Amino acid sequence: MIIDIFSNFINSDLRAFFATSIYIALSVITSIHLLLHKDDIKSSVGWIALVFLSPFVGTILYIFLGINRVKRKGIRLRKNVGSSGKYSYEIIKSIFDNLPLYFRQFINFGYNAYRQRFVCGNFVEPLQNGIEAYPKMIKDIQNAKKEVFISSYIFNYDSVTDKFLEAFKTAIKNGVSIKILVDGIGTLKFFHRSIEKKLAKIKGLEYGVFLPPHIPVTLPFVNLRNHRKIMTIDGKIAFFGGMNLAKQNVLINDFKNGILDLTFRIEGPVIKQISEVFEDDWEFTTGKKFQSISRGLPNIEAGIIAARIISDGPDNKKDVIEIITHGAINIAIKKILIVTPYFLPENNILTALEMAAMRGVDIEIIIPEKSDHGFIDKAIEPNFLRLVNCGVKIYRTPPPFDHSKIFVVDDEWIFVGSANWDVRSFRLNFESNIEIFSKKLAKKLTMIAEAKRLKAKLVTIAECENLPLLKRIRNNAYHLLTPYG
Image: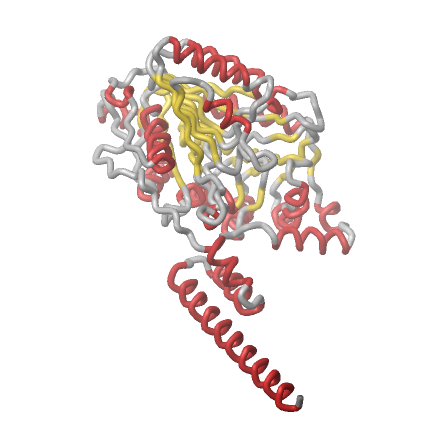
């Protein structure tokens, strides 16, 4: 018996030794990988702490959630990216020569950050909520002649989106090619995608699911989502912005279930850039080479707006949307207008806003009082006091949840699309924004924001300073849970 006890003791010591050795080896190897592949210091420190303080669990989490394995199979080198088409250098130069010097310098900055050129001759119309947007989308799909491409993070199947399915059937009968791309997580409801079954039943329609969460094969990609919302028709019309396809977008008077939102109907040469984003995503998702029928069509002038598309994602070494956002804050002289459903940027953006406010720039940030993620409503509050103390005006709109996204600088420069003001959009999601110079459109967006502001409540310094201790602890704890890659 004594020998057995001694033997068990030796064996337990050996097991502990081997377990400790494996833990140390894995932790060191993981930390080396972190040091070589993570540029963000805060992210690296956080992961290394988790790896060493949570034996095995930290390493497993990093392997599945911390490593960016996405390599875009669909990305192509375009020699003439953002071509100005039939618009002469003189026409483009005359448009930009009327801009102040700091905006012209910002254009150079933006091009160095993302080498996509502005194209002129575009028309951009803002559409509020599904009530305005969906009927126009459906009509344009029904009237399509050649092809319809749709990419949507959320595409629910309900009584409202059923009208889109009927429009697809009508278009297909007319010989139209339709391709639908949905996100594997955004469309996931109770572990199944009802819309996928409906799409599969429509003969002649092709669809793809972006990184579906098949365990364990795609589990490492579960944190990387395609958040884009793109619709193009015949290369002539596009709907582009942050609005998903769901019944909630027409329930604008339903305080509990309704969602307010904004999208843009676009005509003009910039649609080619929008189509290229869809083509890349389609190739990445399906593995099939693809080029739209409309690619070779000549540019058609539809307006006077200069615009370009910014496509970003975790496969891009530069966080382009964040860089351009940061740069725009820095060059602002008069006013910054921000409308966003989630406001959780990192310290660099917050500091830039503080410095802009201290320079005398009028800054308004409009965010929902209640979002669709309760913890985010608490997580954003720790940033309020530092901004309000510098003169930034923060407004919180009452229900229903407002998912709109607007960013306007000095009543002329506009940056809108699918990206939110949070680390998930800046670092983890595949996003697309459109950069625009237009005083007329800026005025329209300012009026839309003004209507939201009139219903909103201003965040005060006293409110921030007098928040009870337990609520401050709770808010900061939620803030720590927000993803930073």
